[in-house]
Picture 1 (cartoon, rainbow, N blue to C red):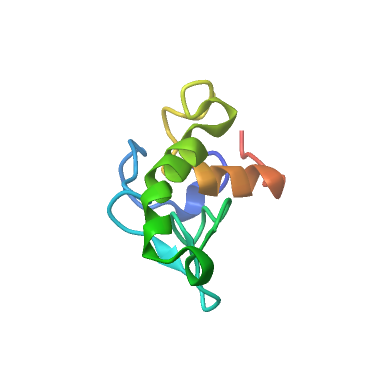
Picture 2: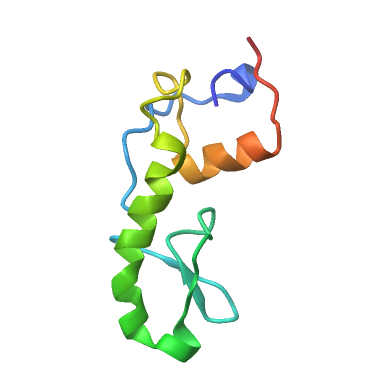
Length: 99
């Protein structure tokens, strides 16, 4: 996030959405499918549910992107360059803000 590591930022654009869980997904070596390699909540067990379980993935992805109010209520949303699951990981790690 811009306020966390200003010296290491590249010139990527401000985050405006992600197709994770809709156009691609992540599967770990144990057959658990998630929206991406960062957003791993509510995995789908492909070994027990089969490929039909992937039909639930778009709804799971949408819920993860909107948790805690999505990006709209965040004071950093105008400069943030990461998705909601990655921002949540930073928050849980209590990553310092350079303000």
